[in-house]
Image 1 (tube, rainbow, N blue to C red):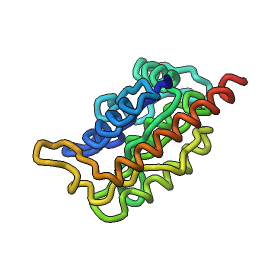
Image 2: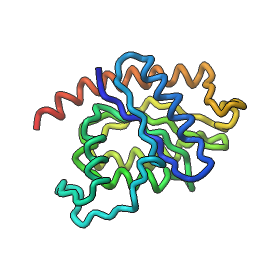
Image 3: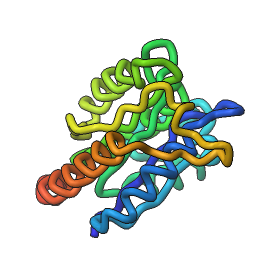
Image 4: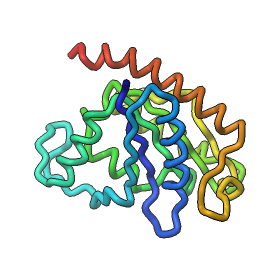
Length: 190
């Protein structure tokens, strides 16, 4: 079984990211190919990058960085759950990604994007994929895009996916397993 980290990117009050991230984490756990851990950047609460030495050196000074490094290093795969803010992904996720370099490498990443409007966060995904490429993280083409996300949140605050979203999630999760298998060999061949 592969270790999957589901990372919820938003940190602002009233955010919906954790609700959507919990849904995809549940789907991943039920898939059977993963040991799933949910990481909410609102709870991880990384300060704006405050390490004096560039992360490529892996000479971390602060405990929050060492803990973040350990969490990401142990992962075999990721799912980034991201909102679209101003045609990109949230600064909180960019900050969390830029804390590290080596820990992201040779691991696949699925994306679950969402927005209040019809675009479903796809512009955020394009920016995120571009940034992950430089870290040797392999972004899958299969993803889940949630348009007008409020329509999927019930009165109890739970995310209720339709058949289209559930099918997209299964396809993405199957591909995450395939890529995790292949990239594991590459990662171990240092």
